[in-house]
Length: 515
Image (cartoon, rainbow, N blue to C red):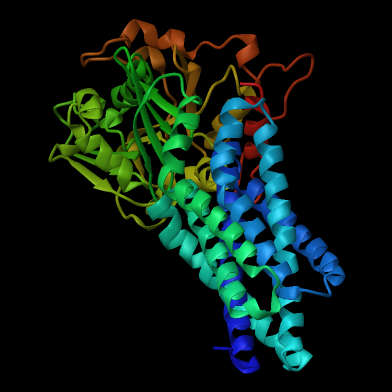
């Protein structure tokens, strides 16, 4: 049964809304891919949006040359978007695993531009077709654009709240590609009388559909083998939570946790890190009644704290409940953290650390900051003067603060910027660093309201590495580890990191570029 022009025009409006949903999902998907694999979320989303919109502009310009067979042109545009976009995430992981460094960025930016250009061709073609059906040009343009913009909002919400948390990045790409393909086949059937050899075009679409459905069901498993190449040891657990990708690997008794590709600990030497993070501050503090951990969802910091019999209450604030759940359920982690998070003295709060510090009324004897490195804007705010001022304001007199502060060897200027930022809040600081085989040389910043005399501290609980006699040696830095002295032949000017001037991110990127 042949549809009348009015019903066909409605189908065009619906189609424009659906493909715009797919377009915005691909756009934010590429930004998420770049953030996860390449780092610096703001940079990647900025480049993705810029390239996508530039591609749309060029595509819209090129659409002027499409004057005939508008429906067939639209169908093949959707075929292309479905195939290229559908396989984009899958191929991205393969490129990252097998091709030289930098190939993944080039591939992502190229795919973003191409999908943007194809998306830019869609709307002008649909507007012309609606006009051909007898709808006034001003009305057809307004209605198609309305469908496009409304679809954009829906697409963004779907990706954030449904697709990414439920399907992950690989399956999401294949699923959205299937939607683009379905729209193309729908339009092909509705306008089949206008298209010569429409069965041939339909067969091509069905062939693409077989590839996409195959990718939807098996692509993630294959991508897993690509991702395995990025890690030294076999992956034993992988989860994409609302906030990050969580991976556990294990080989010959060495369990490692990675968050968004960054190593969090190795079971062979994590005790060195956690003992230095915890015990100097605990040795300094007058009391151990109230302890705050920011981060530390793996339970390893809490394990060290529970060695002190006089600890009354430990509050652990970690953004991601998935990490805490894994720490309480995986026997690999339970054997390391000794079930610390299940202790009745431990209260877990899943909240952003900055937000928690802004609203809490509690005061603490010891505050331990075990947060990921400042490699993006959301983490950078947790390394600013404003954040450290909040910590100071909730630190009891006679209390101590200890912050993990990245490597003074690999990221020297970053480390001393963190130290300077803490000091700028009016706190007294002391600097520690320790050699951790899986990480390298790692730094910590200790702070209090009063001067810290390290040789007066005493480690009085069981440890595997740290001793009282060793403490002083951990405060000695070589020339190449200390930007307070010289960098080359010049004295380095260190300025605090702030929300207004977040220069720490750029320093961090440059420092770790070759590591």
